[in-house]
Picture 1 (tube, helix red, strand yellow):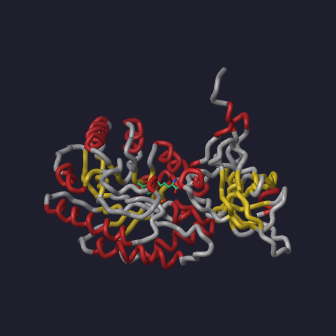
Picture 2 (cartoon, rainbow, N blue to C red):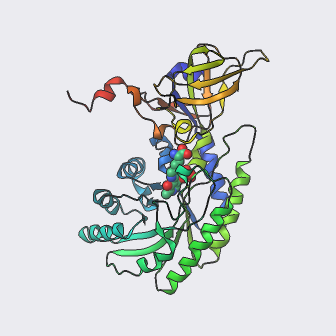
Picture 3 (cartoon, rainbow, N blue to C red):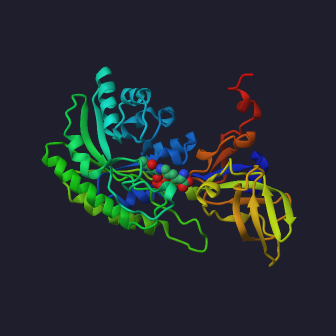
Length: 401
Ligand code: LLP
C-alpha cells in the first residue's frame, strides 16, 4: 500500500481484482442449484476496469441510467443481453438507448413508466421485455436512507396492485418477470426469503392469468461486515442468502433467478488510502486530518457508516491514541471516524480506510473544488492505474465565464 501511495499519490482507491473475482465465484457457486444470472449493480462501483473484469466472468449488469448502460456497453457490447435496467425515473432517451441495445429486461416502477416504455418500443419497432418492480412491504433492518421495500418508499408498485397492471394490454410489451429490491446493507437473510415468497405467489397468479413469466429478479442488498471485531464468513453469508431464496425459485417450473448484488461483490475488495496531513490537538480532542475527505468517501457523513481505519505502517508501540479522523472539507460532517482508538499516528503516515470498494468512488464529488481521487486495480504483484487522478483543468473544463 505504501508503494501504491508513492507511485500514484493520495487519496487513492485501491482494489483487489482477485477479491472481486472470488466474490463472484462464491455467488455463482451458491446459486448453482438454480438457473440464474448475476447482474452486478453498477452503481456500487462503475470503474470500467472492474466492469470488464466482471463481464469476463460472465456477469450481467443492473444499470440505473443511460450513463451506466453506456459504461457496460463500452466494455462489452455483447453483455447487453444480460442487462437489467432499474430506476424510478427513466427518461425516453434512456429507454431508447436500452431498446436499441436489446437489453434483457426493464424493471418498471410505475404505470406511467410502463406507458412510456410501450410508446418508445412502438416507435422503435421493438418489443420491450419488462418486469414490474413490486414493493413487497417487507421490513429489512438497515439505515433508513437505503431501505426501500416498504409501502411508504418511492420504489416499485404495491404488490397487491401489480396483477392488475400486468393485465393492461400492450402490443410492444412482453411481461417476462417480476422484480423486487428491498434495500441495501441487509445483514439478516430472512427478509430476502420473505420477499421471494411474496414474489413467487404473484408469479404463480400471473402465470395463471396467461403471462409467460420467466424471471424473478430478487434485487441486491446483501450486506457486508464493516467491523473488524465482528468477523464474518463471506461464504457462509452467501450460502445462507442462497438458502433463503432458492426454495422459492424452485417452487415454480422453469423460473430463472436474477440477482443484483453490488456491495457484496466490491465493498471489501477496496480501500481508500490517505496521507495524514496534520495531527491537531484541541482541548481534550485529537484530530487526525487526512488528505482524503467526505467528497472522496461520503458514507460516514451520509449514513453514519462505520469504516475500519488502519495505519499502514505500525510503529513498535503499545500506546494508543483516541482521535477523530477527518478531512479538509469545511463541514463538521466531514469525518471518517469519531473517537476512534488508533495506533499513534504522525504527520506523513499512510492510513487505509477499509471496505471502501462499494459506494466510495461512485459517490465521490468535487465539493470544495477537490479533484476526485485516482483508482488502481491490483492483480497479484502488479497494479494498474484504472482512473487517473482528476486535475483542476478537468474540473474547470465544462464551465464558462
Ligand atoms: N438493485 C437495485 C434496484 C438497487 O437500488 C441497489 C442499490 C442494488 C441493486 C444494489 O444493492 P447492494 O447489493 O449494493 O446493496 N449508497 C448506499 C447504498 C445505496 C444502495 C442503492 N441501491 C451506501 O453507501 O450504503
